[in-house]
Length: 189
Image (cartoon, rainbow, N blue to C red; front, side):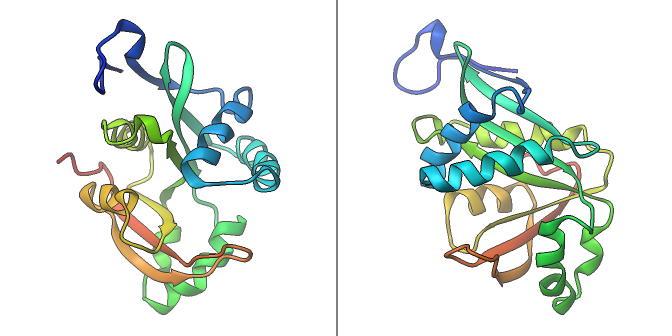
């Protein structure tokens, strides 16, 4: 999938290409994008590197990247949810309290979605998440996002994600998160 000449300059090298990503091979490049987009320091990147590499060994885990002239400017990855995974064990009590515990079953989890700030607001994040969920065998998708009004949460709401639980606290995370879910396929504007 291509996004010709986004932004202010129109140049063939500015074309965005979205396609499969070997995230294990390009983990450092992906985490560099995440660090800028999410404001992560070197210590947090080192921890997340190990997490990403472990996640990519899970059954059904897959990733897509957005590139400009071969340089990664955005990525998404996810997998079928497994209640034994750490994320599920943290969010389960919050979902249960809201009557949404069954969302942990038969769901595709969007684990990470990040676009470099210089390439945001051009539809790249929307394309990444809709493309990866279009190939999901599960009937719905879940994710977590910082629980604040943000462009990311606005995107998720526009795609049909609804809040399933709010003020979810992850160990060592400085801000609370919202767990969101949507039936698949995602809504297209």
